[in-house]
Length: 120
Image (tube, rainbow, N blue to C red; front, side, top):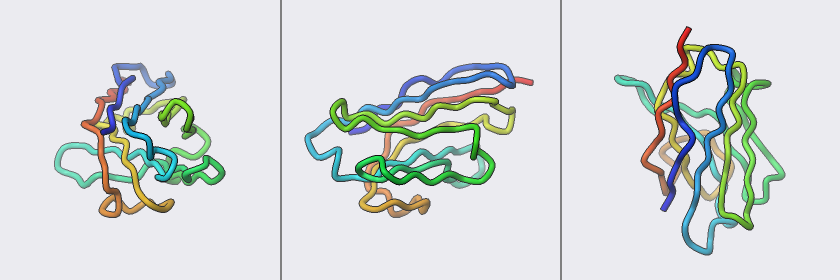
């Protein structure tokens, strides 16, 4: 089970940190990713991190602004977001998969999502 938290309302240029807590003892076996979705559009890749945190991947529009990290001792993955823009507004989901990938359909577990709203 994955549970996201940390979403909210923020002004453009501001920062937020999303967290995703995983239950179970196999968290470290999975690569983890963050995706976002706006109404009427498909879930879009944001960032991913390998099982040991050694490799990360980012969607181009968030490079340099977002940072993904994980703590396998605490079974958590985080997404630090800075210099937020109105176009970052979406529901953000964390997911678990078996290999570092940006393809949503390969993810086997998903959280319920957390809303991020960036005002101009």
